[in-house]
Amino acid sequence: MKIENWNGHPIRFIERESNEWWAIAKDVGVALGYRDAHNLTRNLDADEKDTHIVSTSRGKQGMTVISEFGIYEAVLKSEKKSKEVTDFKKWVKEVIRELRRSAGLEGFQIFRTMDKDFQKESMNKLRHSLHEPTKISYVKANTIANKAVSTKYGYKKMVKKGDMTPPMLVDRQAILADTVDLMAAADKFNLDLSVSKTIYAKYAN
Image 1 (cartoon, rainbow, N blue to C red):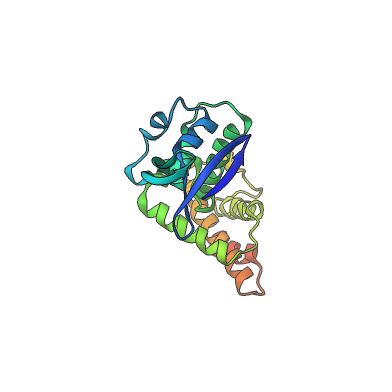
Image 2 (cartoon, rainbow, N blue to C red):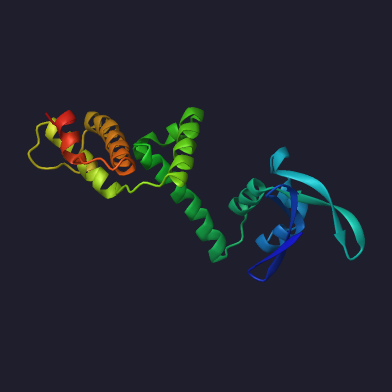
């Protein structure tokens, strides 16, 4: 058993499998302002909660424990107005938005992130990038994509994304995805090439 202290609340963790730590639901509930452990766990999926025999001052007792995913779910559904809870919820949304952006999807295509194939591909890319980090400037990638699609549609000056027509935005999605992939490949293999010139040569002519 390990005990973590969060905002003055001790939370007990049980290692059920190798490096798989489950938290005592009662402790999490108190920390997050739930009325009781049942109120916390009733909306969790079956694989996010279980019962475990825990040694206490009163002897061994069966206690409800929740997995890492269960903890995340409990935090997201918590009505506690602490800054930490609020900031965590916003951070999770930021992570999802960055995944959407890195895949080249626009804001109006947000519902595509609920597609299983998209989720699988995004997770594979994320795992790969964590093991093989690349130096990608998304600001630069977006600028290259904007310039390329603007030139393709006959504009002498770069058109900002917010001013693009729907057909331009569709083309921009593919260009941005290629730009990011090329930047990653150039960094990984130390390629001596200009990403912008390569993209312009393919799309802007």
